[in-house]
Amino acid sequence: MQKNQIMSSLYILHFTFCILPGRRAWVVTLLLVAVSAPACRQDMAEQPRYDPFESSGFFSDGQSARPHVAGTVARGQLGNAVSLSAAKAGDAFVDTFPFPVTGEILSHGQERYNIFCAPCHSRTGDGDGMIVRRGFRRPPSFHIDRLRESPVGHFFDVITNGFGAMPDYAAQISARDRWAVIAYMRALQLSQHATLADVPPNEKLQMQNLK
Image (cartoon, rainbow, N blue to C red):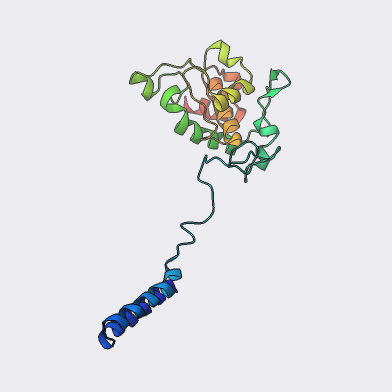
């Protein structure tokens, strides 16, 4: 709409200077400019708004950004609001998963682990990842007694908040995926200390047939 108004004004200006003598042409030109000026407004570019972190005289704390209402949950994270995000029960780390660990959960946890954890911890969890081989500080192996005996809530807390040289991964890994990663870590720990008695009967039979 604004573009059409401007183009119409240009055509009228051209016509005015062609047919009207000097002074009258300038008078008509000024009138056209006054009439066309509103068409050049950019309301969206100059709308009344606050820039990020801009101060405000309207609110008592002087800030334009408002704090979240207590109990606010991000869209799509309602299921993570309580049980999935709790690493502790009281003052102690939890030692149970907030949902059943299935083969699908383990497979998904393996995928997330290989993306976010393996570069430092390695795919077997021994702490000899590719980044460590290039000079980054080596993390402890998941297979030492201290970490094998640590409750799952401890690992959830470390992934969420970071620990030592390890940054937090709360932004990269959702709460549910963190539990899936920990489930896969438990599978890695078991794989390095498993005995024949831990092998399911059908798998044990297949192993015997391979001999």
